[in-house]
Image 1 (tube, rainbow, N blue to C red):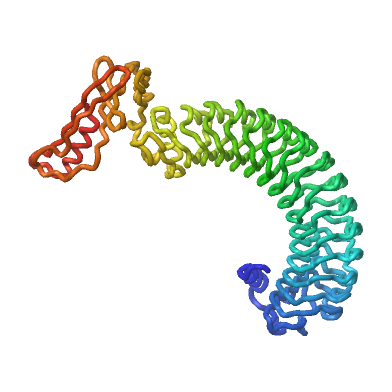
Image 2 (tube, rainbow, N blue to C red):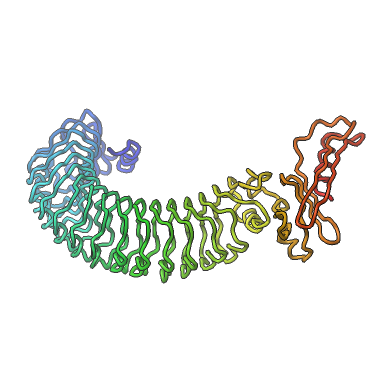
Length: 547
């Protein structure tokens, strides 16, 4: 059934202003377009304009179309029945109309068609018998439609097709058999359709492809095999399809692919492998598809991708590898992809990325790393991606220390809104901090006892002072010193009690350790006479940042 808003929109487009009286409850526009709708319509109304070129019957109570109601409409070019659930067609219902080019019957309970239902429609170009209850098609049903170019049969209950049902349709360009419980197609069913450009076999419960099913479809440009039960593609399944541009194989049961299954598709632009059971992709899988621009392989079981699988795909713009099991990417995984704008690696098991992983992607605009196991990223990993404006990184266990300083700065400058929900997982005192809001001075590295101490930040490392960072076991107090002096003290205090003006508001001692030795730090915060609580808070903040 078509949605009610769509029907109202269609009615509005057809009607505009009324220029001629029509038999109620129909409405006419310019005397050539007629729109009839309403449950009170049980038969074709009398008095319809004889020069009408388009007739629409929408959501009526029409039951039977016999052989006579349109005998006086020799100018009719388009006849449409939408959502008329009780409709049935008698033999010769549509007679011999010299000008009829489009006929549609959709959304009815029509379960069978007489072989004579369509008479002789020599000029018919488009026939739609969709979303009804058709269970079978009689042999010879299309014998008197030699000029048919588009045949839509999707959304019925067709379980089998006569082997030569399409033999008369030598001019057919579009064939849609989707959403029928066919399970199989007869051998050589499509052989007569040498001019076919679009073939849709989505969701027909197809479990296997007979060898050579498409071998004579030399002009085919789009093939949809998605949402079936295909577990294997036979050798040469797509041989000869040199003009094929779109291939849809998503949501099947494929566990593997033959190395050169797509090698005969030099015009392929769009390939969808989503929702299968692929654990690996052969290294040479895409070598015969130089024009590929969009590749979708999400929701499989891939643990890695072969090195060089994308080599020489200079027109590739989109790669989607989301919801797999990727643990690592080989060196140079994305080399030669100078046109790539979108790369989705989200919801995998990636734990680390090489610093040059994205350096060749000079056109990259969108990168999704959400839902992996990344703790940090190498400094400068995005230095060669001048057009990169969106990097999604939430749901990773980010370790917010000095190694993340460069990335945090990049996020604040270029991708903060997209990462407002990107949080630190450690250390404990920063857990839950949103990365874009994290102050740069918080990103420090603490030295473990007995190890050489790391610098407080990349900036201090460049000064050559080789500072030591002293810390308590909880990481709540950090003191950074070099050979000449101590330069920074950071203290994370618990919630402060109300200030009374008498006695210390906070007073505590710590023993801090580092590889350089041990130091004792005492901090006391007192309310000064005449200082308000707000001013004392400001003073307390200053004391936390001064040695």
